[in-house]
Amino acid sequence: MSVRSRAVLAVLCLVLVVAAAPFAYGYVTKYLKLGVSSGDNPLAYVTVVHRQLPPGQVPVPWVERLEKQTGDDLGIVVRQDWSNRTGEGPYAADAAFQGRLARHAAVPKKGDYRVIGVAANMTDRQAVKGFGSFYAIWFQTPVDAENWLMANPAIFTDAAAEKSRHTWWAGFYAFYYAPPTDGPDLTDEVDTWVRSITGCPNGEAGCKVPDFLKTAGVAPSS
Figure 1 (cartoon, rainbow, N blue to C red):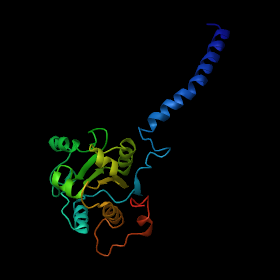
Figure 2 (figure 1 turned 180 degrees about the vertical axis):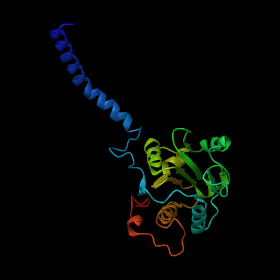
Figure 3 (figure 1 turned 90 degrees about the vertical axis):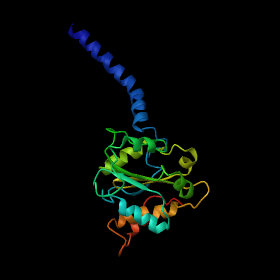
């Protein structure tokens, strides 16, 4: 190929690249949004309490705090792979539990997200009927939690629960709650609890939640 031919071919390639750029940009932009129609912010639907806190630790004492604060047994089961000394059993190795959970909510697929465990009450029909749906996913890192939240703006399979659901992100955790159709709405209690365990993860004694955590994100009742 002559020098002239190579020059003409290079110009043609450049023209094609320039012409295709807007279409390529639109395609990439569309899929980088990961299906979230929330304007320019894929986390617009999330109350972001803190991007790093609380630390990743077994949430059993936190669940006990929530039930103490609400005064009710919410039927929450903790399944996790961090320690075999606490919780109701493993998460990753129990495909049957994951299958039951998947009937009620989106479940991270193995290999797609690094999940350590979950806390949920959706497999207890009476608990959901009386107090609403509670779901928390515990990831290995805050980045895993953020990626999950950006890619999964819909979580509950029940349409009414999904419509009324609130979502929080705090460090290694994504938290979800939807009030019952006929029963107490614990949204504000869950919101207070998320901020409490974020500011005081090691216990309630002497706990004073910092002001910036009290107002972080958008309060669900506002």
